[in-house]
Length: 212
Ligand code: PRP
Image 1 (cartoon, rainbow, N blue to C red):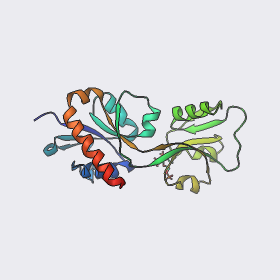
Image 2: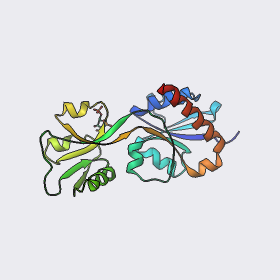
Image 3: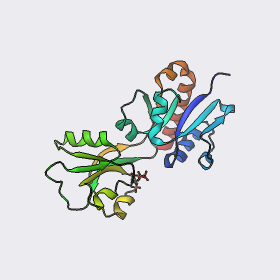
Image 4: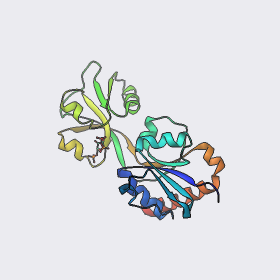
């Protein structure tokens, strides 16, 4: 039998949706994989190995060929300019990146501070707006920054909008829509083209079926 296809799956909130889509495409990944603490799951009957990775790290595993295929948010792909093929929009986990802050607070005139875990997306956006800003990098709970007066604005993911609302913040501008994408290592595409094409084909049919 040929070597298994290694898939880097995002742990956390995207996992369930991604596993369900895989299931519809004919790949039976256990939906309860998240409950286990195992980081590598084997599915020998389907010749697949699944790596459970942090969403931000999926692209790294695929770029270095540790995984052949991965599921990554467009936010991560925009933020990290990596050498991977983005082959399919899976249209799952829709959300968007937005600029938010306290209500009725104009931007400081001189070098407004922006808290974010997306320094590249934020810098690119404000550069296009002709604004000179200072990025304050944070790893999570970004919404804290304007509340405690650390920054003028945040650039972060909005999904339901609950986090902004419950923290008394408002959205100022939407930067870009986000969904999860299927990504492929370029060398794997050459070596395991048939299996990968089969998976891409199955998944694109599942995505189409979902969107009708
Ligand atoms: C994300 C994002 C927002 C929140 C948005 O954070 O950074 O904080 O979800 O979702 P909502 O619009 O549905 O409220 P996440 O839960 O990934 O945790 P983090 O704060 O550690 O980044």
